Length: 201
Ligand code: NDP
Image (cartoon, rainbow, N blue to C red; front, side):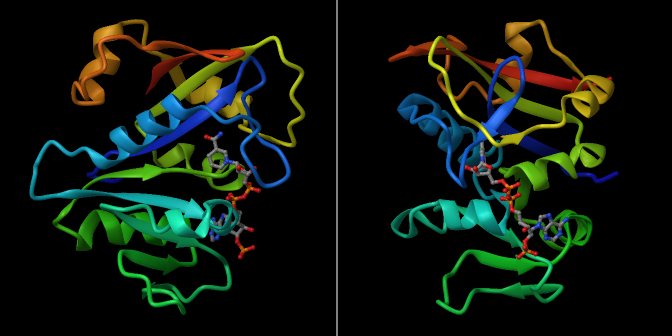
């Protein structure tokens, strides 16, 4: 659909692809947060940056001192936004308000020569309406013995219908531009997780 890669990046509790509870992440994983920051920030072309597209609820879930996410164009979706407006009431730089995924992706694709990739960063509603536009997914598959409560999930039926997991470690490494990661498996506290690339069938 679009010329630029449109890539959801998401951390999921497997096997049910759980992603959130009561407006927050169900876990706190420092290394996973760093991975998210590294991958969404790094570009192949040093003169370009990436865009991160998110729903209003995910924007609000980021503590105010950490938003907008630095060195990336932050695009916030809300149906009550204007079609496209730069900045917010608070006047933040690096922020755009938009009112539909499709039109936001269209503009980012055609009107911004300095944007390299478009990362979809959540939450559930936005992820689940984006798959049709995406060639790849970056999924952190999380496992734990802890009993976690969750109320937000990815649409597993759509994911399995449209994507298959790349079995090759090098595929993932190349896709994340050799961000210095030599290992895609991590153990952190009660959690073990692995960074995976899913490709469009
Ligand atoms: P979202 O973050 O997807 O935000 C939903 C809001 O975004 C809607 O209410 C609407 O705003 C706006 N919106 C959504 N789709 C569109 C569209 N197509 N066009 C215009 N506006 C749109 O909320 P969810 O509740 O689904 O997800 C939040 C949860 O996800 C939290 O628990 C969060 O922690 C979790 N999360 C998990 C991640 C992970 O990797 N595990 C990553 C990111 C979030 P309005 O109502 O103003 O119209």
